[in-house]
Image 1 (cartoon, rainbow, N blue to C red):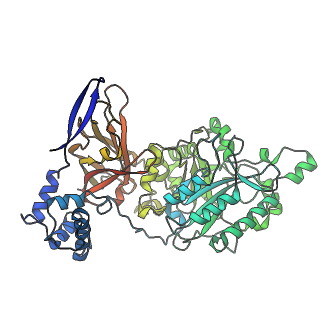
Image 2 (cartoon, one colour; image 1 turned 30 degrees about the vertical axis):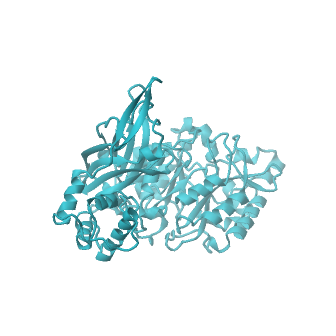
Image 3 (tube, rainbow, N blue to C red; image 1 turned 120 degrees about the vertical axis):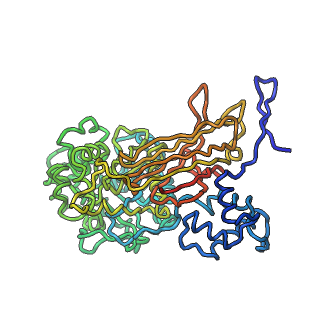
Length: 584
């Protein structure tokens, strides 16, 4: 007898729905019969041939195939010794549907990690200490720990004096956010920096400190990080080191220290330091002025040169020498900085609107700039709910550090999660060569120029399962099993973007769609495949059934088990899709 779900209708009678067991789709049965030679079991030799030819597992050996077969047989039949003749159809299907054995993307670091830092997209957080919104949430070390454990490599801290002006707090200035002591954040970074990835953590500091507190920070940083801290003996870097050379190192990045002008304030009665210092916080007020040339520059560096000259004299020298990546200044406007570059390799920060405007007006200059320097982009100040911007504009123009609110769950953050599933989830993704080098006719890459189709991705969505194990039977519908459909979206350069979806399968916890979609791709290196399962609702908005995002450049061809994640990007325990990826 089969299993059933019962749903109570109108409080007086039950509806009964049979739970059908998930069966192998036709393509799975066809592949099994082909490689098993028409027999009932697949031998290790035959299984190895399937992995190499059908799944594209280049370099897969007979020993690899036997190891996988042993795991499958042990899990399914609880046999500790490999005594069976091989895999039967059910074993074969079981293997294909296990995402830890047969996942959709490569899980190891495999990019060249010896190029300078600007050659990589870097997984970067914005206001990494905030637990919620930008105006009134608590500041804590917990979001920093979570980010590091997810593989984030760029952590941002805003440094302010405490009320007694004798210590340093981390908080979002000019808001109601509650502070957290800097020392607690630094110790958390030390303890968790390399749990997920061995590659360097870049701490970007937004500094609102007096020279004596800068000296205190320098002492704190040296004491806590010790040999982990990287800084060049000569001061400013002539060229960025590589992630490989900086393994297990901590790097500080900020503006060269500005004088807090307390001495001058006392003498001349001028405005307070906080009012003088221009920083990211000010962009809460500046969003409406984004078209003004006055703000067409690095928002971290809008104070005048005179203050910078005083800064170099009065800033704490211990602090200044620890800054490895200097935040540069677009002194004569952003366009000039992008065209001529900075005097030495540096980091430039822009708001999302500045980037969009620059990409629209002089996109190739942005690409050229990012070939030698690091470009950081942060959310506009009106995103007080900690939402995020669309990241593809930045990535397609080579911007390395797109600073995201890691607590701002939604489609933009899912894309961020997707890109950084690349390269073993280590937080550094090598940019395609065309973003770092000129083309054969000396041209710079321009994402707005439509190029010829380079390859076509065929995506087969076979079936899904696991919702009945992870959700209550009335989670999606009180009166019947769910009506699932899958949305398949291609994200990348404008020419490659496309949206498709399967038909709705009614009243079924284990939907079988068995549908194919094709995506012609002009720039597959920058393409992301976004997958979202929805539950159709006749009377209300369709319910969310899970999502994932996969970098096309990392896809493993063949039939794959695709793990599915919740809205926060946490992996659902049981839910997965069976899909096939083919480049045709």
